[in-house]
Image (cartoon, rainbow, N blue to C red):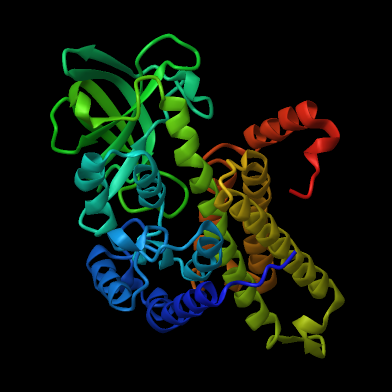
Length: 398
């Protein structure tokens, strides 16, 4: 198998790497670059986004015809990894969750009118977006069929009632993608909708405090008490909610992995810089066998994660849903990120635990990786079911 990138993709990868090094890494050392929730300050973000657009690096996942760079999923994997070498990277290039996945699904399944009204403002960077799925118990979490929020048809409108929580980005979003229950059919009972933040009938109850740094807009709890959505803002057919979810989450789960690999590489570079110069007991830390074990294992795990991501990316590019491959990548790379950052903290000693480096930021951020877009245990269940169905065909060279 040849993992060599095409000349076009390699060119983009190199340009993202250079942009991050020149424009973004220097910002991280200045506390004034951060907002109150430990992400890049919004006015500074707009400045950096302007530079990214001018450099021809805006929205690589979107078609060129609508203002993107038209990269395949394999190209996204190579470039997203370079972007997230900086903790500020993905959002600067309009490749951060949840906008990234929302743009992808709207581009795939939206009507021409929906793309013009709901997709294009996100692609252009004029608005932010959010996807509204997760609910408090006993509602839906990893199992969307447990959705309790209802959409009841009333003529040419749908009336939404219910509650959602841990809705990423809701605090700054203008465009929302909503999943609601439209019938009791176990497979065709969910439907997707679009609504704008200024529509009445819903509210943000609270921004939920979390242990780690936050995406812009935080993780919010929402209440719907009669939100009216015109039928023209329904996504796909009535009852196609599960299909909508699979299309939305398949690539989105993998883009998380792409970004996390960039953070893992950054953590290991911080570790290598330190152990390569720190002297102790008559020599460099990097020359100690115990340190080499840690470095070698983390480097190997990152490479394993990269291979799994590229395998899944190639399958997606071929038109396959790549459910097994995406689940394997999600499980492994979530662990890889935590392992790499934990290793880097350990090798940096007290310095790694301090705020003198981005490592403690990464450490807190990394804990969510095994939870978001399906907990690791849920993805292992997916793999177990696939194995029991396919047995020896589970392993193939397709």
